[in-house]
Length: 390
Image 1 (tube, rainbow, N blue to C red):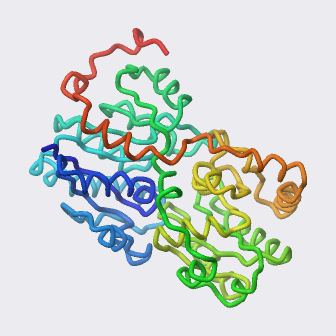
Image 2: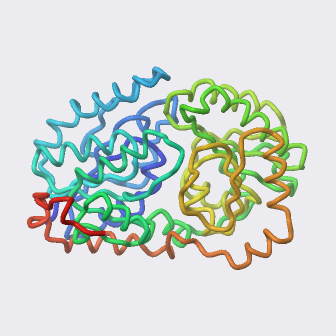
Image 3: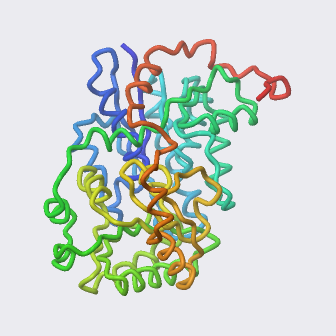
């Protein structure tokens, strides 16, 4: 039996991977467990570890690591806490494979643990790249260089890893496992969905729904609350009910969260914070628009034909479908983007929309690869980047 340990520290990475994790947990040939840390264990971020428990997954260890200092150094301190807290847990458990996803500091810790403890590792969502200059980009690439194998969403990501010197034998293009939930999750009607996220009565009146998710970014830290206030005010003017999700735990989240909660005093705004997967998937199905800078707008919204306005610098440069319009954060730019989304030309393009990240059937491919790959010959990274040709 193959022992596989997944690492998860925040709601967003768990949401991407939860389908794979649940399949692994059901597989009789796999002994699967999770190492849970970070924002999952914080009441301030909704204690999303409860979502993991609701999925029935076995948790090997819960490691409290989150430093809520709302500063640049807090992410490093959180990473240091994960390294020291997870080291003996992982060493003692000795999994056959260590799995992690994305571009946060915790995946770099997972890759480091695997490299130094001689445990094969698999990095999901490597090879992606944004043009925003955020530290998550080099963290993603550094994690890839430390990882044994890569399960990537599209061929472009595989090519980028090849340019980083990764042997093509390590790289598997499987599509995005984040999209399977749109195939698997049953449809809920609008009333049930809105009730599930605690929406205010205004939302129940048939008005168009806009989902707003905005995460803090260093270069826009001071501007972010104004971006959100401007967008919400304009959406209310245009007749939307705005449903706001919680920001992630990155520096700048405190002032942003306070602005969101203040905006939620209005009857046209609901702050749902965190919600169960079934309700979020169906909220995307029923919404008329998604606004903000979440990767869900680029990677997932096209699967349900949802128009997206991406505010500010985050996510720029990443591949996306024709449902995404990029906008600066100021009110005037946002109004122009709203007019673009409402245009006949845009809506004509939406009729031919295809999600470039996959077909919603990637989880099974990932599980079979995890079971089939012989990691022994791959573990020692002996290849010279000079001799690995893209």
